[in-house]
Image (cartoon, rainbow, N blue to C red):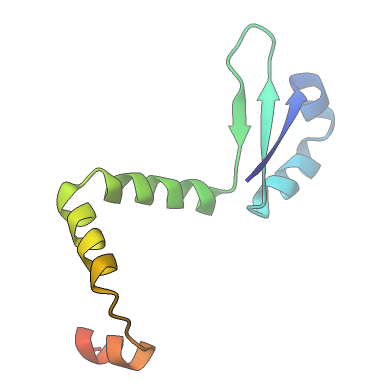
Length: 87
């Protein structure tokens, strides 16, 4: 993901444009305020996917299942998966 940095003053002047840019999910905006740690303006869906990934990766059982699945190299079509899941 591409990150572009702005001072707080520049971000204030371009706030709505920066929100639109970040909302695409293709760019994150770093805003630097003197004397403070920078903050990031990022698409909500993007951060939610990061949180989900961290949640999965912090569960040893889920990681084990993912690795086992990758080793099996078995692939399902959409129809096969629906049948397997009973939906």
